[in-house]
Image: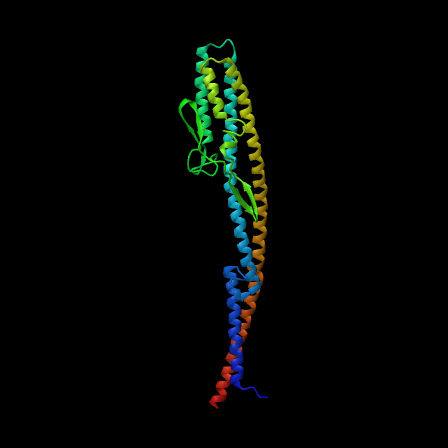
Length: 296
């Protein structure tokens, strides 16, 4: 069957268009370094990339939650360490005041130092991060502890705790209400410091002795809560390591589905350039031959 010149021209022109499309695709991969940037390029891979990006977004949000929780727990731990040190100092002063050789006037002076230490514990109990109280339960917009008349300290937070999502269906507590450490459940250390102050100023030996024992219990209560915080911090650290690993694996999977093989793209571009030149040369020769036939 005889092939007409018009058919040959049409075939060559079609090849030319397809070659240019392949060249453009290879050039786009090289410029964007992406093999898949729209569904038409690879529907299956594109769909997988969308799913993996959505999962990565969840993983990174969980990571931000972990950072949020870690900052609060670590600050709480530091504040409780300082509280324990202050309580130990108050006990030392009480032991000093218990001695029969200490005069009533000296006990008054010791009471003044204890009172200042009490104020410092109130400050620690009202610690904030980013303007939010860390010992007020879920009431974070106000100071949890208020110092009133007669060295009395009142708790104005609540007993609720806050947990954060760190995985699918996994939460970790990140708030310790003040009612679990400063004003209960076994010891209300502010009441005990107030009672110690009253005993010091009244030159009440038995009251001072009782206060010493209560300071030991207060330190033990704070230490117990610190242990709880330490366990929560460890969980957050372990979770963060898992989230980092998951993020890395997801990035690798996304890259495998989405990123271009640059060496392959360069090779493809060069092949299509050669094909383009060959097709253009052939098309030119066919055109010249057809023109000569027409002129004859």
